[in-house]
Amino acid sequence: VEGESGEPEGAAPASAADALVVEGYDLLVGADGVHSAVRAAMASQLGGFSASQREDFMRYKPLPLPAPTEEARRGAFNTWVASADASLNSSILAPPNPDGSLTGVLLLPAAGELTFDDLGDDVGAYEAFLRRNFAGAFGLEGAASAGSASAPGAPSSAESSLRSAAAALSSARASVGGVT
Picture: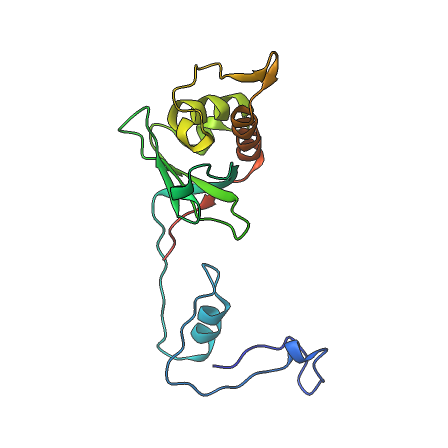
């Protein structure tokens, strides 16, 4: 499979990265994502080559999460399943970052009882949703629905983390999950 340099015929490439590359191979694994340049190059150059994509029914948005306080959870792939409604198909997945912090993704169905479209860009709607379904991800298990404050009028770090996540979700665009 030949890569495209984008340069006119006979012109020198602008950089080594733009050079035309021709390689022989026995096996080629294209793991470069949903909009695969490898797949596009193969489809344009190999007669009879075909590939298809399908997506699952989920959408996702990234969200910041507080670092785990429990020793057992540090370095682990963290998963939370929506707790308020067993029929709600939603979860948060959060692999650990090298510094110990977590950046997760909230998964919601593309269609159904509750979607990202339903929550829109309403920070309050995301706060309520996260508090109701994922309190444990923010260290709010057993906390009163209004949350506990570390000082009168000041939000706890768990409350601040939840509010930060809600703000991030309200401003992010949902992405398609599970494209194969």
